[in-house]
Length: 400
Image (cartoon, rainbow, N blue to C red; front, side):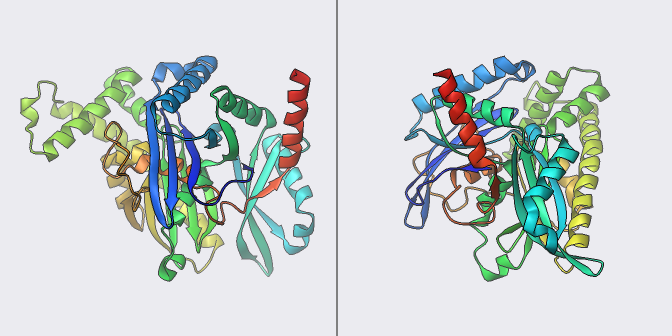
């Protein structure tokens, strides 16, 4: 959403993904066309911290300092993204005649739809393409907006952690960017892919074709709802439900390596296991319906474009029960992402956080890649960015 000049080659800025359940930092580098993971680290956020805004903020600042001190990160430049619950996203259609006064149209939309102040808050947009509505050709826009106080607090937190923010991005743009580098073949450019980030509180859906973002949707459905459903079904706490899910995944992983579940005294009984499957499946069906609506909107809006595959990322992309439901409900090929595919990871160990594909690193990777090359996620128009930075300068002068 906000960008300042970045070096195009060599060492990239730190990509900082602050989620609800974890903090991820990664720094990439390029030696010619060879992509390298220069440094990476992650710290889990305890569930009890998220209930207190100030405690969470202090914890995040402390964790960032800790990762900087113990890791191989170089420099202080960082690209981060706004939290999903602080970002407003909607699609907007304008006639060709209205494009000449697009600023006024966007101001009216954010004021009416989100209650934001267009003279103070941040408004960005992407042109998703041209569509036919009746006998008229209109432009489909993706509108991003956030209130000024959220941006100011986010920047202040980064500076408190002794980082130098060079850009503030959004989860959808970072997610798309992390995979766009892989879509270089002509046949890839002609396909439409859907990238779906399954997080703790939100699911982010991004449709992209030909190197362009076509549609974005965020929905408040994620891993926390799975835990609440399990807790309600078994009459246990949400924390216990989360632990139970982790135990079941560990048991399945052990079984996959040839270990017998009976050798583990803490193995879950069949009735409990089935209750967990039923609870997760019910929420997964709801999520599948919401994603299906996104498919329907896209195919109706952009007639003639066919979706070829859906790529899943995020912490919940490891949930096999969810993936099984999605495979039954969605009419496309489903795969779990490998955002670090092709990267040289010789000098970095992901052992503490590795779960096969490292699919939960997609957003962090996309953040560190920002500015590496020109893509649709970089071409987001910046309405009021200069005004926002000018206002921050005035605030800094007043504090001094």
